[in-house]
Image (cartoon, rainbow, N blue to C red):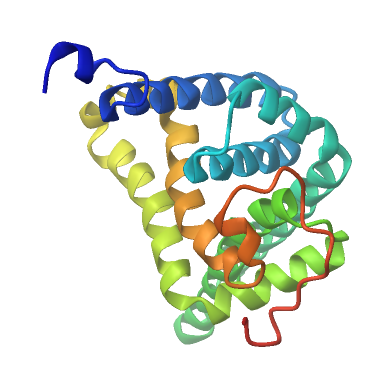
Length: 231
């Protein structure tokens, strides 16, 4: 391939570089808007929605898409984040109580197992809930219900989501040099993980709303019911 073809606007190299730049911008915006902490849920929602648009190749401006999504879902995303955080704190409190009660070994094991299962389920629901809120126009009760149902129905997708979100964390903790001691997270890490998760979730959501396989500009207005089989 000639140098002119290599650097043409539609060449694979330029498309890759543009996508990489979009993810860097998206990562920076996510970090900046997450600093108040309380807005983390809204930031995660906007990150997920924008990353899915980039994955579908339908984002003309990562910054513009992110900021529009953040304004649109600021209230619901913040509340969702507080709900997930609150449930996580409750599970952590139960774990601490069980650990401090001096219970018999078997009883303690059962208690830890229950907490572990609840934490696992909460993690799976959260992995679906924020992208779902970014994609569909539903109330929070419906968001949590459908996220729970999807996390069970789409078992392989759920395992893929756990892999793309969990493996980078494991690598960062046990092989910090591979992530330049965490610096890659500040460069592109959060957006990169959201992008990979977005590839998985676009396929899941498109099984209920086929138009999502393309690039809708707005959320589908029609209700979604994962309790029924997708078309």
